[in-house]
Amino acid sequence: MSLRPVSRPRCAAGLRRQRGVVLVFCLIVLVVLLAGGVAVSRSMNASLSNTGSLALRRDLVNQAESAIKRAMDQTYPVGGTAAANKALNYSPTPLAVNDMGIPNALLTDTAFAAVGSTANDMDGAIGDLTGGVRIRYLVDRMCDIAAQSATDQGRGHCVPITREAVGGSAQLATRAPPPVQPIYRVTVRVSGPRNTQVFVQSSFTKPES
Image 1 (tube, helix red, strand yellow):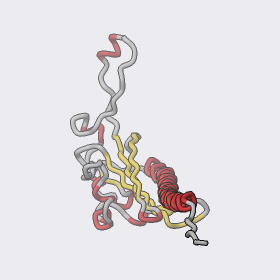
Image 2: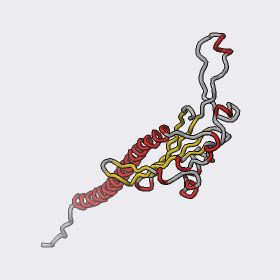
Image 3: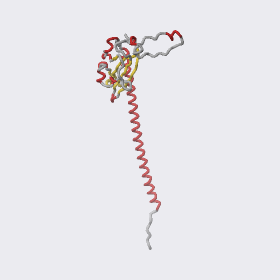
Image 4: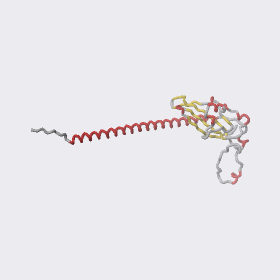
């Protein structure tokens, strides 16, 4: 009797090859899923960081209102004494500004010392945490001549208040313009945590004393 070699079924070898291909595809899918998970995690972290930064800036902007209120409550002298008011953080003429309209004196401590006093700086708070927020402001009058009132200088040297004409009366059309009232510009710099700074600018008018 002669013995014949037993051959393995071809289907078993093909099945092993299929399993190997499936394993490779599973590994590829797993790598793609892991990469996608890392990307989503980074995106969420960036979104949370941006949200926190926006909330912090909004809070700092709100705190600038306290400096604006203080500036509006001050009484600014006119005449010959109007040129020297560092104690009030006040300039009777417009301050030099950068391209964004921010006074250069608010950009460095050295420049600020020439026109204002650090004694007027205010402390703020973030939530329940006190400290960590510093508020500094400057006020400048929109007139060219320091030692004269806005009324004496007139519209040629002061920024006038623009008012729309109301009604159609001929008498109102020929009436003399009202006296020039000074426009004060207040610029506030609020410095917060993580080297965050915001600048807020507003303007107001009030009678000169």
